[in-house]
Length: 427
Ligand code: FAD
Ligand code: NDP
Image (cartoon, rainbow, N blue to C red; front, top):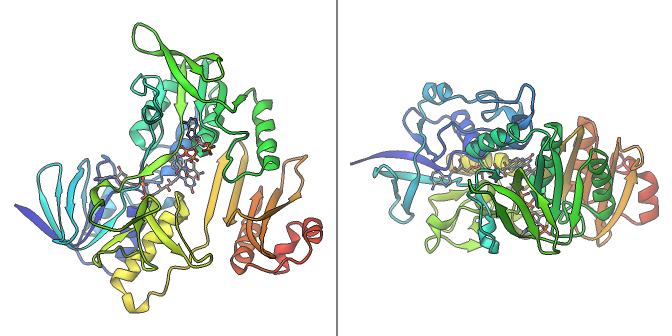
């Protein structure tokens, strides 16, 4: 027993929501498209979970952050899917896929067949157990990937007011959650494996600016060490964390953000995997012609750099989704995906965006002292390849994005530093 659809999207996160909207714009007919998600709610803007969702007052709640509100587009509520004849199968896991035979089986035992499959299964948070530390299932140890994690974290925050939180990891989750914890009046200590926060993107100068601000808000940083074990009470709640450097930190709450792994296990042995993701071409098409991959799971050709990459950011999830749908429904009109990497974050009153590639020599510009508008350029082989900007206006972000895409020549690094943000306006 089973059903047949023309298009099936497996996974119901950010990329799935944007793909659904694009399908309707390209003219999908009633009953042709099905989305299967193991989450119990319609696709939503995941970035809200570490920001508005954790606020102590007036926190963001569904339905206000369903996709595609993050791109200032329509909010796709469950009613919207119904009205557009899209079958939304929620709370249901896809257990197996036969990519050659164009069939899949769900956790309810249903077999579904399709003409085209879009893989949008996103990623899972890495667990401490994968680094040899036990205790992730304690009620006050929180990860943050989906709505149920966010609900759990919001509840733990409420019961930890004026208490101590330890944040493990200084990446995106660590930085955004630490800010939310401070806003909730919780004392925060961040444990960083490396020398500074956001080590893969931030230069030491950028990191120092934000760390100083966090310290001004009472956050303590412990660097160059990792968690080795937890102390528990008789209810199996964590009471303290033990670090490799011998420190012990009391903890009412532990937030862990130590990276992710793409959810690709359904496709291993069936599709070509590269750099931890499903290898796709410039149409987001995998090694099986009727199977496409978008968002966090896709390893795609970055035309601008002539390289295959996997990106874990929402702008890519949205744009790769639109491109795949266009490639499926209007193949003759769809050119190569020409994507400029874009990352952003918001914490406290700060807001930054990054465009391009963070390789080569770095030039900093702007007012790091007052922290209002500042940034950095990355220059490789005499060309501007990346730009970071804190506190820019909409127009300034558009300008740096356009300039970075053009990879303008840079002949004099000192001149670039003097010109600062003005450089991108002259490109
Ligand atoms: P997801 O949005 O993760 O969706 C995948 C979906 O597939 C999930 O619903 C999952 O449950 C489902 N699924 C997986 N396997 C199966 C299966 N077998 N059967 C059925 N369903 C399945 N990026 C930014 O650029 N800026 C930000 O500010 C930002 N903030 C973030 C904050 C948080 C808390 C998190 C976790 C991520 C954030 N990101 C941010 C990253 C961004 O959200 C992701 O890059 C984006 O969600 C990827 O979209 P996706 O559709 O590929 O995956
Ligand atoms: P990140 O990859 O951003 O950061 C992980 C951090 O954990 C790094 O600082 C890393 O250090 C550190 N780390 C790795 N292993 C260990 C370990 N064993 N012990 C201690 N620290 C460790 O992942 P996050 O978990 O922060 O975020 C998860 C996902 O969510 C990512 O895909 C991210 O892009 C996304 N996200 C994006 C946001 C945004 O774009 N604004 C906001 C929130 C989430 P090192 O760098 O030295 O390896």
